[in-house]
Amino acid sequence: MLRRSFLTCSFAGLLAACGAPSLAPPGAEWDTLSPPPPSRITDEEASDIAIHALGLVGTPYRYGGNTPEGGFDCSGLIGYVYGKSATGMRPPRTVAGLSGYGAPLGRAGLRSGDLVLFGGGRPTHAGIYVGQGRFVHAPSTGGTVRLDRLDGPYWSRQLTSYRRP
Image (cartoon, rainbow, N blue to C red; front, side, top):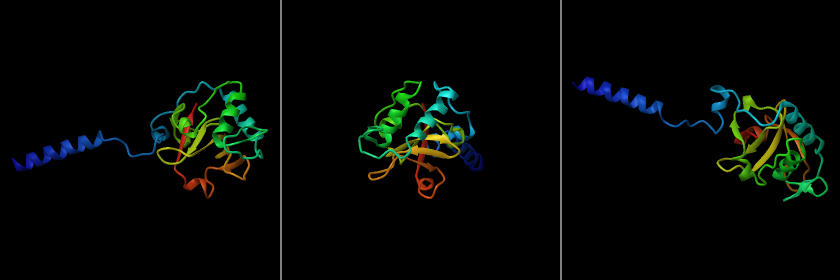
């Protein structure tokens, strides 16, 4: 009888563990379980977004900036590029707003035009993925909009999430 109770409890514990929430980072489930989420943006529009973002490399950083003439911060750059694209999309103006914009996806599903967000539960920085492991972003005061690699020495150590508008 004791053995039967032990087996019953063990089996019940195993079933409960299967239903426990995943500890994987947000969006990780897209890497292995599902295809990337659909997007309102066509592949051609996504490429145009990437090309436009690349064309802004070298523009000065300015906190609160959202134009090439005045400079960009990271979310201002994203808003400008998307707003000037054929999509006419107006993403949220803050990184906090961008963290809930569109659908989450894993790194394996990235395509040009997707958003890359850095930071823990509340991201603090964002950029536009342009393909081949690279993204365009406005990094910091005194800097300029630049092209960096997700696997670079600094960015590869950051907690990263991805969003598809």
